[in-house]
Image (cartoon, rainbow, N blue to C red; front, side, top):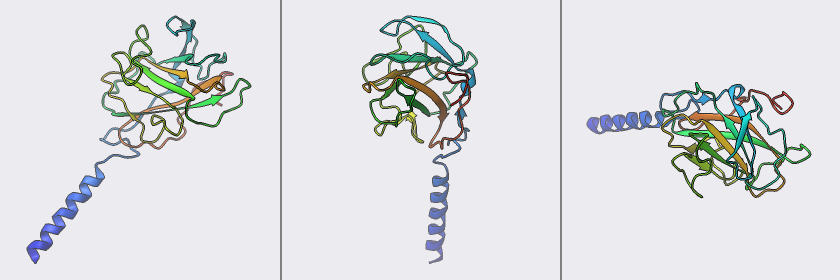
Length: 208
């Protein structure tokens, strides 16, 4: 009986250690979550219909100053040159807000926006119709919607082996979406509990 008791104690101890290593709010895997400083992110002017011609950087603007007018029209945010390597993180969480043409915030739902992380701004921004591509390591539909994953605490598994240069967010099927405001980008392992991670300027120089 004593031997059986010792074996049971060992099994309980192993089970406890295993549960403690699954990750959680701290990011999991021993790495603290990397909350991207949005005050260093810049919007890139997108000129033509297929989003392949760009103008100059527009500064630290987190919401497009001109309304989106068509489906799949997009906004590119560019990360700073000193953006750290994120290969130590397995997941990413991105959040945003949506507004109609009158500036009224829209309730989150499916079909509002799609996001694409981009390695090289001079390369392909779109990638395959579904899934990742050579220059688009993460592509997710239904940002902030019920069916979407990337905005949730668990985030999306990204598979990036180096830091992305840009984040491209496109208006999807919802014609009411005129403005998109980026509110957070967090790299982590395991679940991440979102909080006050927004910094930088809105369309009128405010965080909103």
